[in-house]
Every structure is written in structure tokens, then in C-alpha cells.
Amino acid sequence: LPVRNEEERRRRRKRISQDTKMETRQNPRPSAEEIRLWSQSFDKLMRNPAGRNVFREFLRTEYSEENMLFWLACEDLKQEINKSAIEEKALSIYEDYISILSPKEVSLDARVREVINKKMQNPTTQSFEDAQLQIYTLMHRDSYPRFLSSSIYRSLLHGGSRTSSES
Image 1 (cartoon, one colour):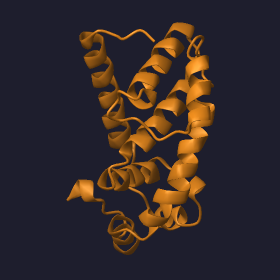
Image 2 (cartoon, rainbow, N blue to C red; image 1 turned 180 degrees about the vertical axis):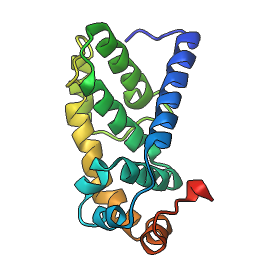
Image 3 (tube, one colour; image 1 turned 30 degrees about the horizontal axis):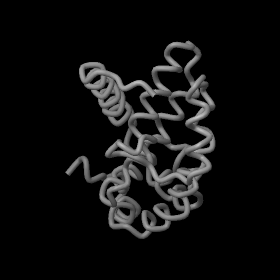
Image 4 (cartoon, rainbow, N blue to C red; image 1 turned 135 degrees about the vertical axis):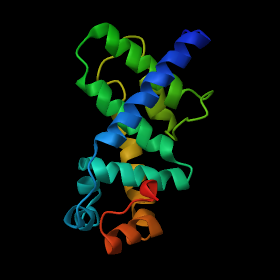
């Protein structure tokens, strides 16, 4: 895959960072009921924007925030309809999360990596589908149980809608 010049990388990362900050600001405080529902299933947590933000905050403490960032980037890619934007976003996802040179590389098995490498010849909105499912499953099986017993979640559960970002 072609390597982009440094200026393009900086612009793309700044855009991604701004999008991420905007998502955080747009999410209202979670209600006590929402917080309680997050413990019922991982799907309920991930479907809730405030839940994703709190879970992402937890992942950051475990040094695995890249899993959520990758999952969100794949969700964003699925919404794209413009072919050149799809190609640009797919390359960005590849460079940021799939490339072995990336500091935010996600943990994928060799089969999924090989499939992605082939799909990158002609990227589509579904190019990372297998990888996204693998990372979703990883977060569900590994991080989610720890999240439910974490001080971040417990303090929200017992204290209402207070998050550490408000401290």
C-alpha cells in the first residue's frame, strides 16, 4: 500500500480527533436507567453513545482504546457512499489500526489480516467486516466483564451520571 506523506497524515488525524471530541460533546449524560442497562448486555452498552464513551474511557485505562477507535472508524466507514471517501477512509483505517507499523495496531488473526490485505486492492464499506467482528468479540469477552467490575462503572452505577471526565 502506498504511504501517505506526513502532512496528509496530520490533517487526517486532526479530523479524526475532532470527530471523536465532537461525539463526546454531543452525548448527553447517561441516565441511571441507561447505566443499569449497560450491565444487561454488551450490545446495549455499544448501542448507547454515552455507554460507548464511558467504555472507551475504561479501555483507555487498560491501554486498549484502539479497539473502540477501530470499531467506531469501521462504523463510520459503513455510512459512507462516496467511492473516493470510502477509499480514503479505508486506507486511513488500514494505516491506523491494521498496519504492523501502527502504534494503534489492533490484534487480529492472520486469516483476517490476509483477507483485509486482499480487500484493500478495491476497498468497500465492508472491507473490515471480519476484523470489526473479531475486535467486537474481543472487547465483549475480555474488556466488558472487567468494565462491569471497574471503579468507573461502579461509581456511575451508584452515583448516577457522574463521569471521570467531569471531575
